[in-house]
Amino acid sequence: MSSLYSTFTQHLNITSVQLELILSKTLNEVLNSPILQQELNSLDIDLLKETLPTAGAVLAKELPPFYNWLKNELGIKRVPDSPDHTTKWVVGFVNNQESLTHLVELHRPVPRPALEASVPRLVGVFAGVEDKQIRQEWQKAVAALCLILVVASREQDRLNGVTLLAS
Image 1 (cartoon, one colour):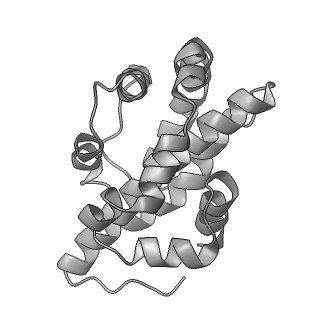
Image 2: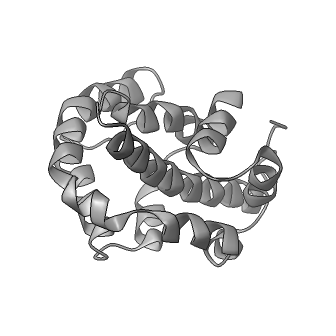
């Protein structure tokens, strides 16, 4: 779990105390929170748009092994056949064509432990990008999107009466 927390605190401008608070809130509270809005507003959308070809190449290369890991190590049954869907979604999000609530709905079937275990690895797919600014911006964007997924998954578990282990 500490890997999940350190991923968020390393790539987002939030402290571990803020993270604990965020993770205890409902999805709606987080989507409307000043902290999340500040994170999303701080993304350099122009840089992300400009470097979509770089991100697309990274995702095309790194997602197939990531999907295999999800299937084989975490037991996730429904994973995309190719990186195309994820890449198109990221492009759509950067271009304001995809919503955060749609992202959450797409990931509802993923069990929370598997979702949380996958965050550091997914954010890490950009570690090989040589340009530091581009690498950090994409890691920040992916971390912000993953934070929303983790909040939604934790909220769903609370609604279903699943006990969340202390982190």
